[in-house]
Length: 536
Image (cartoon, rainbow, N blue to C red; front, side, top):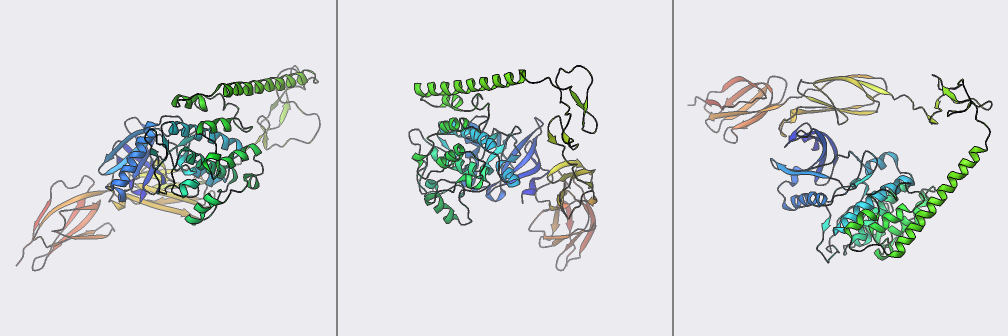
């Protein structure tokens, strides 16, 4: 279970919460205790430990991402293996595009274009290094704190030899809803396969729907190969025709009909009416960044056309600004400036009529007192909350919905949700210590409710023993309400037990049974417990 690592240490990293799960790995938020910074810690799942193919792919992902340095590509900080656990430490971006789309359904076109520019810029760097990602999808797009796209999960990426860009054939890998027609057929892949997957990702983000729906792998793959996607504007009428045309071009069945490169896609997205106003001037976006990785440079006609477009935009912007200034200079004098009183209503301010402020209307309907007139936005409704009183042993870490809140005991409020998960974890306990983790899922929670919850957790320690005869049975009966554990003396010389009091009982045929009370502490028992039975 992925919860087995919560609260534990892996090398210099202390795991704090689970971020996501994958087919071969789990991703956690952790703390680098040397630098005291949060990181994303990707761990190869235990069932794949020792499997050469899984470990090779895991290391390849880290090496590929580390080699591709770009602000829109996840930054790899560390790679290692501790006690058989392979891990990769990366820059932390807790939110993915997939998670955000699951919450909001779809995104405005302006945001889709902004994300598309960032993803395309990252792909341009990868393609310039002859690397095909092969698994572009919302779950592999992280979102930075500023909302920029960060491409992650290069587990399926292939670094190709010079002079041979296509990927291997007869191998179908990727996510069916997002892979290209040539990927579905197991054919040779080049960089245009990533552009198709990016088109499918932007289609999903802009419309709230996949280009091809379905649960059957073969049906979806056949649709990618044979069926044209439906019009994006049929699902999201607010999309502009230019953006729709670009999406459909990216989703062309024939790679030759798509945008020719990621660099060209950056330029195409930046030229859309819905592109961010600063997209053309960002130094890390567009062809100006990626051109350093490419042997060819834009032709003279391309440079002249780009200069003409930006010149026309500058002229139009200046004309609009002049129009606003001219109309403002001929307007009537402004009323006296106003201020906002404690109720949110505007009040006239004394003094001269000149200066900035919000004009006080002399007539018309009364202002809505629930609106902030300085920002023209509704005042948000009060957040409904739930009060929690959590208690656990002094060393236990307490989590509320995977967020660390305290150690030992915590009283506080959290935003209301009809379902809450609280957890206590004994840090640094062995992975086999099942009593070191206690989860409680709270359902049917009501706003304003106060919940008092006890989370009984216990760490574990190893008890060592040396018993004769070797066929004796050794049992530990918990005196604190736990389970009874039993083993044969010849099958193990130690036992991991939750801390507490136990009745240790040793029995064998034709021998006098021995019993004694022992106390198991987290410090463990350094020397074995010797016991030789009296036998006939």
